[in-house]
Image (cartoon, rainbow over all chains, first blue to last red):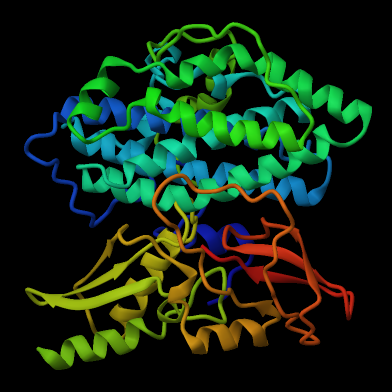
Length: 288
Length: 167
């Protein structure tokens, strides 16, 4: 097979696009997406959107570091972490579309919802900030998400369980990466220590939301489908303490703001989505 | 129709990975099954990582190869469970990786019940340099050009190389 240029090679067959346009094949094609009879499909869809929105918004913030990271290896690492989270998003959105009966695909959820319809935790949407902000956020996010996904492996929804089992392997690497940076920066120079601590301090008020259950989470946790976020706190605290001690950082004491995935966001989300959604909204269903 | 399945399996097993073209999808452990249902060939594949961008290309390559071999009706299904592990890469696949200058993975980490421990110390993984064979190598980044590869450096011959990291 020969092509005149790389774009032709990627798009010429019409059936094997890698990274352009919209309308990708369902990432759950061929997976049995029957919802177990005693699981509430609307709750399951809402829950998959929560976890998918967390991953999409965090992934977008990581992608913003492309061409802005301190070195090439770090840029590649952040892009890879963002790609893992984007992959988790796609499967969770597909699961939501199968469960809620609307048949909506991933594009409908990612590109054609308004900010108040996004159920991500606000921690994911905080502005890019500096490298200290990034590592603080990635450490908190990955530690929390790893604890969460691991508790979903025995979920009574087999699709969610399978998505979580894959995600655990990936997010374990994300947490390692952030933890090693946190130690290097915290136990580094006065300046790196100061900025790492400042990143944690700025982020900390939003940590409380990670452990505040929404009623959908409470119902699904009782049904053995979801994990109660309140139950993640002990593992999160233990891992954070381990990292903070090694990094000579202190746990911030700022009061935790209440929250809970109700579509109330910081002012950072709307501009983030405006950028993420701009091409899909300007040229709906475009492929190239 | 045993012969149909046998032939289709043989064809599917020749299809290579778009990102690691020295490996077939069978070597990589991504090709999970080839069966026949109501006159259709059904191929089952599993993604390596959640965000693997090559899944669409794999589907298309499988369908193209099977159609070229005379199997008109082909369906490619995805399976997510059990999650892909580098332990599924075949011995031949590991040899081909090393020949291409990519260090094959060691054993995937065994996960016990309960929280996954965080190791902050240096990793004690032994990865041999695919160029000079030295075991004196160090990781420069756990993330590389594709989701499945890490970057390493050989302290003996000083060459950088890639390593398929264990998951």
